Length: 340
Image 1 (cartoon, rainbow, N blue to C red):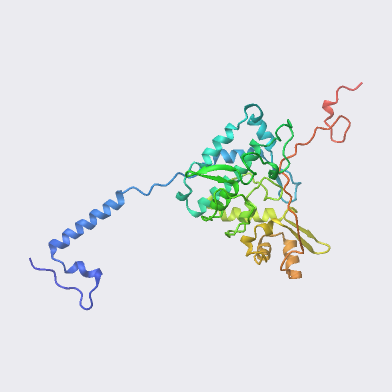
Image 2 (spheres, rainbow, N blue to C red):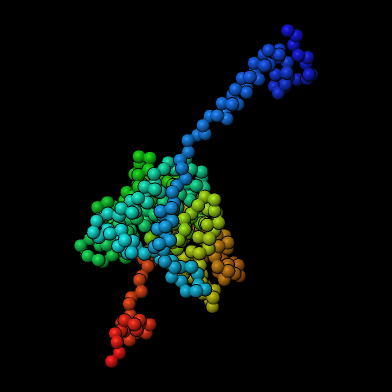
């Protein structure tokens, strides 16, 4: 059979090699290529885990997060661990069945199957839940009836210190709260799964994340009544940074003296801010701090805050308003009894 005429002259070109084959060989090759293409279409996609189930955790946040700021003031929130403790009947049953169900929903997946944004959003949600779960389940001081702990750092028992005890098992490996944070929130694959947090974090990450993580304390970012999601993560982290930096637990600004002091929590997260000298701090504040703070930084050409203050590790528990006695200002007079 006569071969096809050459249609290309000059140097050999792989893209035109097929045009010089005999017709029979050409047809065979086309058939093979078509078959391979069909296999590619019909072949199943790589197995991927289902998106994390945030429904239960989202409902938990909406039910127990309390907004406490006055109208027109920066958003300030607390979490009602006490009410969750009561609702879970932990005093009677010595377990938290509802929280155990949410734990399974959030942590029964392989993080490696998630995209980077999905993994970060999942890890922030899971970290905050693990803190809530551990505080609630161990809220009361043993042997002191209804006396609760005043700080997560006080919740230490035979399992270990609060941030060092085992809280999760993922892909057959146990994790502490600190170990989970470093491995999954910040992506430090060299970190120890059961890290205790006594040594500072060295692996840098997005500095906005520090404001999204809620450590169960006043010096955390404010707990928010919604979950983090991959498709809106960047905007949510921006908002978390702005909300936190508007609170005096992070920054204190005196308009009269133009003095600026900052929480030592910022130094504790120095891995995200360029190291011990915090070269990334002022650029961060210049973008996310309140306007008055940004004006002071610019006017005084600050390269660091004037001073750092100790962070407040008090539990971010919502304090229920106490019922006033009859006759007190604001008391409910309908409960004072009939007049004589």
